[in-house]
Image (cartoon, rainbow, N blue to C red; front, top):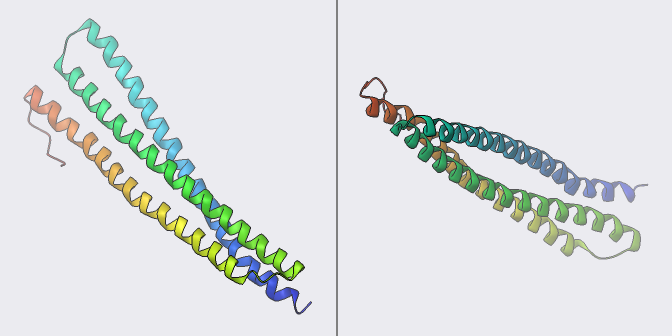
Length: 169
């Protein structure tokens, strides 16, 4: 029993990382779901603009349609980056699982797998770092989407000549 406890303790480190990766994946999934909902809402608004534009020709509808197209492109880029985040996190999860399994099997079969396990852990952590770098890139895209949405009222008011909006850029 005294020899089993250190092995089980060592196996918990990769297992804890797997749980952390699971939470990251859940967060990425939720972000993707929200992004998809935003894209659907923007496309529904675009369809309404197209239908209304057939009835009345307005420059405002054209301006909003251009903005929706721009926001959709940014959101598609966000989803591409989020896919990279998911791949990096899943890769890290697999590496941590293999490290945990290797620790257990190494103890059972008396393999000298310490260096291999350390390499797996380093690769898993490196994969998580790649995912975090992608998260930084994604936050830049989110800011661009926010800026695009916030500049819309000012552009509309300039076209209408009311001049009541403040510049949010």
